[in-house]
Length: 278
Image (cartoon, rainbow, N blue to C red; front, side, top):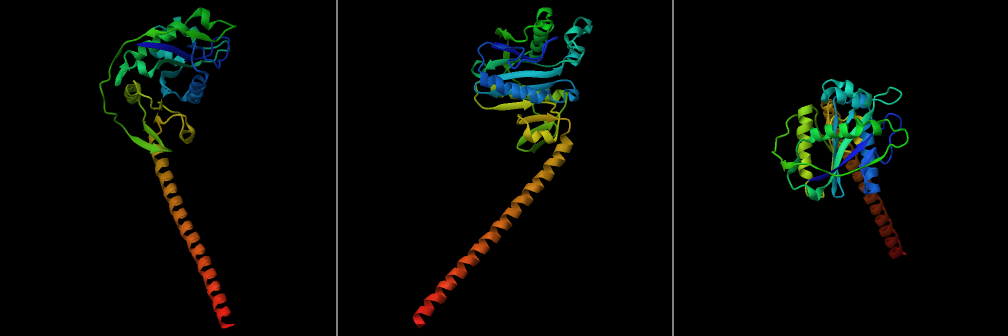
């Protein structure tokens, strides 16, 4: 199956490019803008990323799969003897770089209920090829590059039950966060994207609580699941109380309207009877 690498990152000298560090040449501007909005949402509070945040954005016939990570943490977790890659994890001011490493594919190219196998190894290779690249990383004039397609293997997804706590809050499905649960849910949603035109917006290890109501993502995992559950219960009570108050208010308004109508009808009857007497 054919996929395209897509990366949102700065390099050693240059800041993040609106056109991404790496993306397909012919990508639709509106799609790229939407992806960027989602990635910027996930990059927020990067200091709160436990390991990595997994992302799925599936809409308009294409799907983006990837991770957001602090490059220093990513290298320390995925490479033995990190000295070779340490210089590709921070900018010229010594600040650690937060990066989105991902792939893009057309939904029609992935068969229903299939997944891309060895996804983590693909992401690792993208880091080596495009980030740990002397020419690209230390370029002080260009920070946008075009990606070429690569072939990957796919296989049928072996369905797993998603265990752990789950709540609904602000119209979003929120699951308990752990590395294993995040990975299982990521794979399960990936299998839903093949050949479909439905929208899926997934982010694991989401950083906030109050921020959920304004998030771009509809399916989340969070380490704050217990607090979110309490907030959801409190929010449901407020919604129910609001509905109850609205019903009472509407009843009052209806009674007032009925009273006005009855008063008008009474006045009409009195006037009519007065005319008959005269």
